[in-house]
Image (cartoon, rainbow, N blue to C red):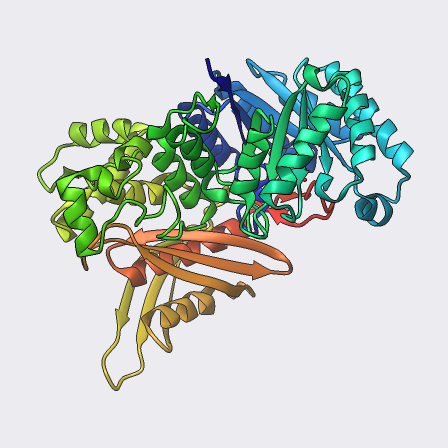
Length: 518
Ligand code: KIV
Ligand code: ZN
């Protein structure tokens, strides 16, 4: 019998701390449902005390998800723990994850607290959390740079106070696999009541070692891994869920544990998170990158055709790649379209939404002969990823470029229901389009990122555009897709402006500043 490895997904909490990746309540419910289909054990749905919006989002996820534990983060203070406890009240299985920093640098400069006061706050928070649920997790933030003797004391006290999971974070991505494994071996070996808790690893990727460090901790006895879809997270991100899960599955000869994750849901989860957060997946990303199973070189293709295992250690279908399945065409009917959406795990709220999506599918089928699963997913992301506020909508766009001429664009948008039109010239048709939109909305935002990915292969592929805008420290990501990349760009720009128009602000649990927005 193999040990069970608990997969703790923090895409909606730590992942959401990436610039512009904040999710609305509806986004979180959609991601939560997909994580449940993926069969992760624990879903950290947010940080309840950060804003009323995040509190509501956690509550909605707790009410929806039945088969995974739903968790809220809380700093080690009474208010945070109470908010977390209230937010998870409706869950079938709810967890409070409370944390406090334990490294000298954090205690001295951030908390301005003595170690004894930190220990007391941790114990108090764990005890209070136990009044809401038996499932309490305690984390020592910046454990990687903490004194090991102090870590042993605080973890022992947290377990005695009722914590059933002890999480050891490499908050700044500083460790290396050997040292990280040794730290777990030391903690588990030295703490007298270590056996009463599940040991958990939480690694950041600043030196590109988050997955390797997490797996080293597993080898040393950790039985929970905290990770995110696509490795999303602040700075260089967190350990990537898909890499951890597939490493443990593919090398089950080496790792003496198993997960209950349904790996065939990985690609769907990756695409959903990418669409909702506006963080594209790099093509050569392990497991979920577009090239992860592509065999470009002739030698490889020949080998794979003769015997797949010559170059493949996993099957694309194992992780949910549809092998570019040709799904529907111009003549497909509404019920075939609806059935395919269901197979892809895409749920629509109403018949009107289905009708609108079907009309857009028909438009796409007129422009593009072959429609693949990826096309439907991109099409549906426009349909279902609606911002809290939809102030701006694209009505029409004309763009013109000709050698020797300055590109030109004319846009018609609706702004709170009123039509407005503008024309502009620019360095290229996309630049002209953005200038035309700006001449209407005068948003005062700064463009921080513009990127285009093709959804499938070929020049008739839909382009998926990501736009990142910044204004007064707030960052938002917008996405849009279309076979015409200028149209996709306009949609992405307006999507970002709509997100910027949403009012709510959230607090970052670690810095304590109002830095995130949804
Ligand atoms: O990286 C970290 O230390 C965290 C904690 C809040 C667990 O995310
Ligand atoms: Zn973290």
